[in-house]
Image (cartoon, rainbow, N blue to C red; front, side, top):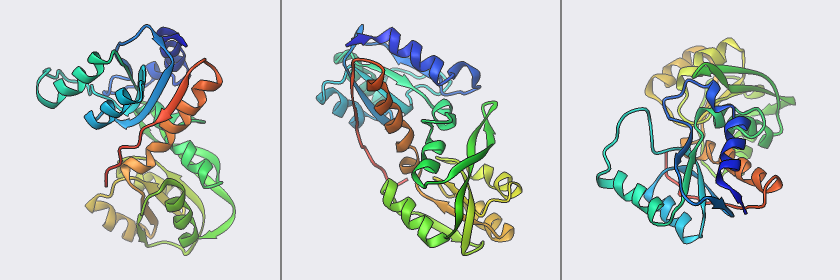
Length: 251
């Protein structure tokens, strides 16, 4: 068991949250118990996720997509139900959006590269004043189909692929979530494959005209890995337990 403030101070510093211009209001969003023993990880701040965390006796939730997104929100409707669930069970909520995408070890993009056994050689795709995407390289060329199969099996997804580039690939640009805006920069970086989460209509024509392979592996699926890595890291430093709560969606 450890004081909440010690964990939040550590996370603020470890994730360098103050260095990002991020409208998602990273950091502690709801304050609960003074002491923390069990930490739950979630991708999204959903009512189902909060109820599952409460049922698991979590004292704190770390989430990628938090409750607050830079504008006033009334405590009514579904937002009220979410906050009420946290308050009733005295659960703290900590959000890490862009800082968790960008972290060079435990971030979504670094973790995806690691899981594919690719070496990170560069960073790109600036959001919030920081590059959050990574360029990674395989030791040798691999078939595109083999890389997609490994990606899908590793993060339990079913990628939608625009195979407009080479059948053999060695470099990959990775930006989790919804990052089609980064596709032109990935082309400038001369990657063989661009991986992101959500598809966008205009990306089809861009990929075709750029002659590049693009894999849309799911917004949710590409952003589980950072939360999982972070909550697995905390028990190595503090006297806490952690668990990941899977609330999947088809996006």
